[in-house]
Length: 403
Image 1 (cartoon, rainbow, N blue to C red):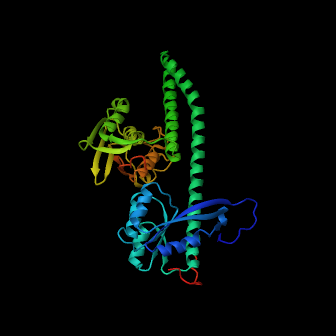
Image 2: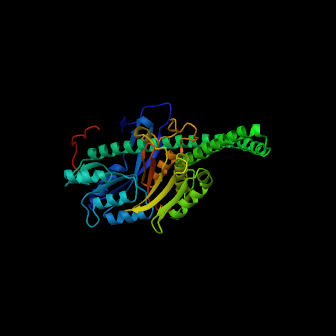
Image 3: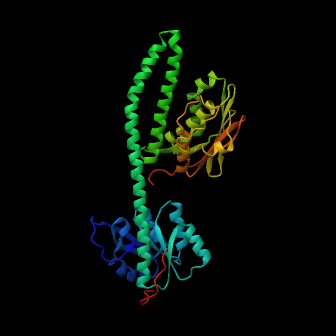
């Protein structure tokens, strides 16, 4: 519920926020008129107990506004004229979209067509205000946009708090589990060297289980660090073939014990701007699964190709494979496929979920193609990461137009 009337008395005082409204229009008199209305206007968003006031500034050209943004200028709500000399309104929207900026934009125009509206909406426009508009129509559009903006911010804040709680819980859990696990593993390794045949099999099974628990802790920490943003990202140029070979070395002992061959088939000098830790998580999870779910004497191939503006990593195995209904569940958290072939294979059910989250961070995707008894191919596409640095009806006209 939205109201611009004085809020009723409540048990809690409303939160006070000030939103930066920017107008880009080459009619300076219109901008001055809008300023007088907006700077005296306030909106109460009752659903979340927020009172919003506004500061206002304007630019008479798209070029000046884009310079303002490049210099770190702030904007919460943008009133953007479609027809501007030089850099037009659509050009400004396109620049905002390409920069990944989320700015709630109200397009102002006297010339809108259906095609223009569709294109503007695809580029991120939230609403339209037709010239000439009245003060009431301006206030209505502003009130609706303010509610949308504040509710969206509140939703993001709640989601962030939820991720933070989860991260803190997993961190405490991991800390409490690591010490006893390390102690148990140490004692088991001592027992392993006593050469008491009757105990050796139980010791070996216990060590396998301990390793599985340590893997679960590591996967949980990887997932929650990524979700919560607690992990610092360092974006740099990475040699993907080198990372693939490093992952193969980590799994070499397990692969050799089962006679599984591994090879890298990569484009010459293929590179990606990415965080090394995130790329390692992708390779390690995919190669580990390819070995773990392979048949003895099988093969693992890591293919790395540049496809357009993305890098495509495909890890193939000659293993047990999956039915289509099983493959569709794989990228969900804590999902493990349980059948007669996997019952003795340990795993956390988190690795592929983490791989998918990382792929999404790079505007990519993670997919699988599989055939039972033949094998599987897991494909992850990643784009270069940017370098660090960076409805109710409208009211009828009730007063004279301001444009």
